[in-house]
Length: 212
Image (cartoon, rainbow, N blue to C red; front, side, top):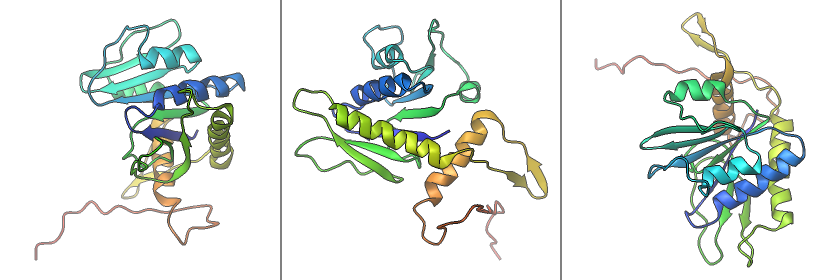
């Protein structure tokens, strides 16, 4: 399950692009999960909010993260989710679309503003798009983003990650499996020397540095 972030300045139209892309993907029969980064907090229950708009476009579930908590919206339910781990474990979809999270390692679609330098982001940028003069994204732009997401889905396939603590295998299930596999892919895909490799082995030494 691919995870792709829509990133850009606060007034660039990220939510509008997410709304249009979600509607296009849902029309193709895909189930789209949506997670929005709300660094300044959020006010649940407003029908005109960004999250409600994307929910109405067809994303299910819609997740909002902010300083004052975590909110998950699903069709027919506006109940908040208290534990982020529970929320992520239950997140399902053919594609997961993030709004924001520009410093995350996942692949990005960057929303640019005419006359401004593109926002610097972490991780690979798959596509740059710009909003049109009518304050909407053109059908061609929406199709291009949807194509990038479906190509990511086809290319990624059933990524699997296996974790060992010393010689003991640590079970990874549900969203934990998806996050570990997608994060490792996002971090390693830009590296030289792994072209054509089917299996990658990454070791993490957690021992404190020697002071001797």
